[in-house]
Image (cartoon, rainbow, N blue to C red; front, side, top):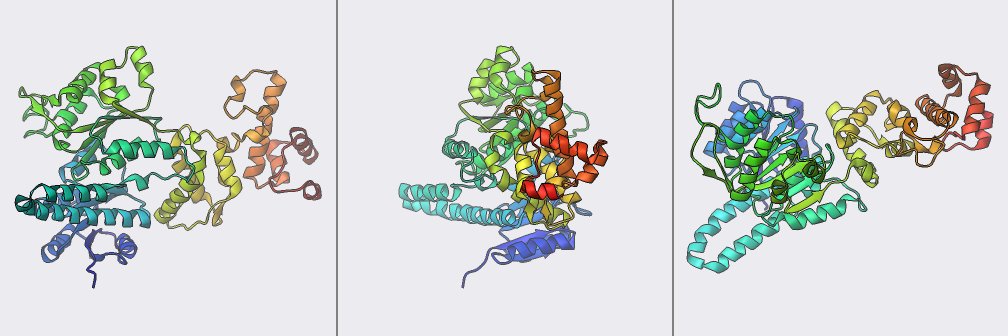
Length: 493
């Protein structure tokens, strides 16, 4: 009889606890607790491989509880679940508790199952490694090679399943290159617009690397003052920082033997660039308020929202730092460059949103997908998530139609513009006569209004201040037709 791995699920909300148990109980033995104290009692009485714990709970928080678990049962894999936006304090707390992974709400059942299976594998791998380490004292180099081979096999592919993409996605080549680079212990520079998933890619590469049994840390440098950033990265000696009664350990020390992802390196000041250059080339630094030199064995990954070559040419970024960080460079395409993934992305996002808001949906209509695919998405994945959330909230039917889409996205449809390149060019800034440019804008407004009103021509004419005949004339003039309708049907309307 196969013994299922044991998980401890901790959440003060009964429905969340029940949902987690329902998702995991087929593959795992699940223990549940509604408080940190109850969870601690279960830990003392059971052999637990992994813990899924909510962060915000009355009394002792999830991070505080997992920090105590780390002291008593360091081999238990610790996973935090949170529905709140990460802050620097939150990241620091998670790092202090030795969290293996944090899952954001709303989670998808497949995501939770994959995280649990990875955690159980990691727990078993750690125990096997400890056992085999003892055997290696007597069995020599052959056993060591066997352990390393097994560890590499188990690490293969960890994390990359989180990067959603289609079979013919432009992301596929980037992911394959990331897989190859992940196992080589060199710095990596990830470039791409904000919201393209550089943090997800960096974490996936860590889980596929030889450092996967050590910690992964990340920090967004954008917007952080130098004094705050230096404390976060370098740490600080007692008394060097206000309200810090003891020494503070920085991320460079915590991430030693692991991976540190620095996002937004293009925003670093000249002083911080010089500090990071020394870390990248020598692995050494001094804590804030200290004089001793510390060293770190940290794999650096850096993320940049802008083109660093242009920053170097303008004198805003050090060339030597660029070459130190960009031993390998991966470029992540913006959402507008991977429209082949739109259906996969929207399906998964809607599944997560439906679970979060307890509002089941069947998905997007083909026409809604077409409109979303015609938009440029300057905000990338976060903007798409916001739009789908809005559509879900407004939806009255299981299938989300184009009438729910925001007006500026509907007006971006290129099929109603006078010029074929209008998708890439703002009509207001384009060349051409005033008449042509006004007509292009007018055609977009007609299509957006009719789509939003489900092609009710009477309501559209009233909203636009036109007669029914006047609206018909403009539709014929610009060739605006209702998708899926024949000319005969239109005449009958």
